[in-house]
Image 1 (cartoon, rainbow, N blue to C red):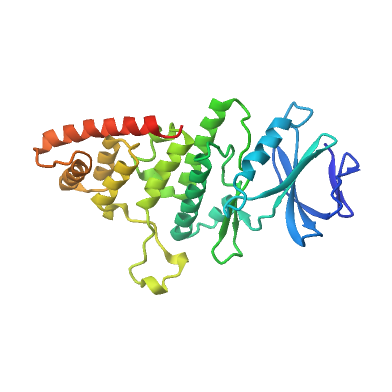
Image 2 (image 1 turned 120 degrees about the horizontal axis):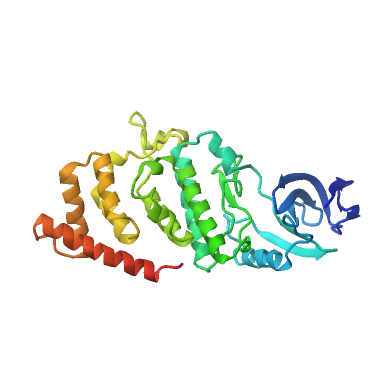
Length: 329
């Protein structure tokens, strides 16, 4: 497929794509499945993005079902501030294209190269996790979530975030596509929060092998215990966002840790114990953890320590199995 811009028009194989109300400005993105151009809407006086789908390798034309499936999925989230909106789409001479919201800024990949403060990472992680939760609640998977499909508007005072390419259709069968979606989400979580790689209870195969909705729940659980901290020499009201520090997990309260494993029971108690050892909570910290957990899921912490740990472990395993059975898969 030969594509070029000439006199404000997009020529595809020497034919002009019929968009009389748009002036095509420049190419702004290129991937395996599509090319993206900036366009000016002369009627509504706004900048938009024109996405033109390309046939996949070894294919002679775009899969029509994939194209319309992606547009229909995206339409369910029109108005969501964190998802790039598709305005319209069509097919012309076997060329599939859409006009969508123009998202200025840089990719999350480029943004992270500058090692942004923890407060930015934490805020973006919350926004991404919240957005994914709304997607999964509708039974939809993103399909291709990675650090190049998330845009950060660095000129915006609050570093506005937009997720692109929502609803990329199943390409290699549902099972393989969902597994890939989960792997990409887990990788993204570690890119946003590098210290999570040190937390045994999060960075393990049990978490990585969960479905995307459940990985997102686990990710949200660790976000909730990973609040950025203020430097010792700063006051809250005068500390700029750029100076916020990663949390000190050695100071993480037992109550917060217990809340995490109770509200999202996908974490291994054995690996929680490893965390307590690695971060020097000591024997007292371990006992305090099980006592608090016993109060929350058993309701009685009066039994002796050895018996209590066995009772809590068994009860937690039951809780976890029930949670996984009822969760969105």
